[in-house]
Image 1: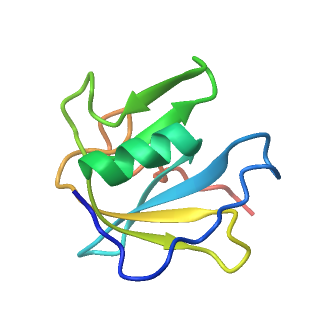
Image 2 (image 1 turned 60 degrees about the vertical axis):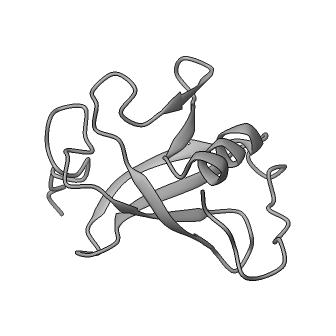
Length: 112
């Protein structure tokens, strides 16, 4: 279970229709692993369980990372941006984050 040391920050769930973007970053390597969205229930589950929970925008349901693949992300810290409308989950995870089996979802390069 995670416990914060500061008073609760009021997140802005209104701006994106009840959701906030969540960047998932490896605590040790600082690699960006994925981007997902959380609603209030997903964030509450994450804080209570210490495991990364999100809102699936394609399936319209709560989901825990790794519930099907077994690639659970243990959330060690949650950072809030300066506008209180985006989060970073700092996680312990040696497993792939991407559904393709890659370590990070950000493995394709855009040609510029």
